[in-house]
Length: 239
Image (cartoon, rainbow, N blue to C red; front, side, top):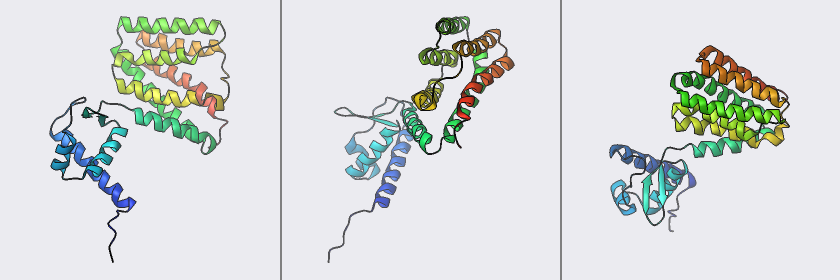
């Protein structure tokens, strides 16, 4: 009687995870940087002592989280820093939450608020006159829209993006963008914004004035007030 050599899913998953760890260790040991070429598939198979299938499964999993980048016809490279996988996961689970655990959406908003309240203090130390001028231009656009009766999501988002540009931290933009995408993709399910456009613009104006004045305490208070409106819209959702 011939014994089957087919691996169970659990064994395959464990093996793939092990190969992933070994590939990551190789990147670190060789001091490879983002964009650097990895050893060829054959070289990796020999060095890690793994089969072609095990290696390919591991590389696909690492590519999904941005650790490596597979360029068909060219080879495999060390991936660039990205939160793309996190953005996709937050958006997907945020949409699921409305029908299953709507209270989860409030948790996402809470995390975004904590981040922005902490980051706005750092902006005060990093912002230059040109940074403040650019933020002022966005503020003027927002107030012009408010005068016409509605602040667009695009300008609202732009205000927050420009606000944190002085930090020169791409991960900040990606992470806050993830929370923003979740919230605005769910805009229809959450219902129309209840705040008058003038009130939305005024809350942003208070943030802008506090940042321009270099008043950290006022900036944090203004950011808290800004999130009061978002939290208010979520109070009607069940936990």
